[in-house]
Length: 74
Image: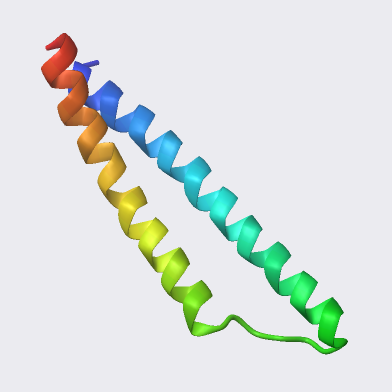
C-alpha cells in the first residue's frame, strides 16, 4: 500500500472521530436545552453551522494527512 494512501486512511479515521465527537456534543447540548425549557427543541443555525464547518474540515483532513505522509516518509 502506498504511503499517501496510508496517510489518507489515517486522516479519514481522525476526521470520523472528530465529526462524531462534535455531533455527540451538539446532541448533548440540545438535550440539555430541551430539559431546561421542558420542551423539544431543534438544531439552531449556530449548531448547524458548527457541524458544517467541522464536516468541511473533516473532508480536508485526509488530503492533508496524505500530503503530509508523502512529504515526511515518501
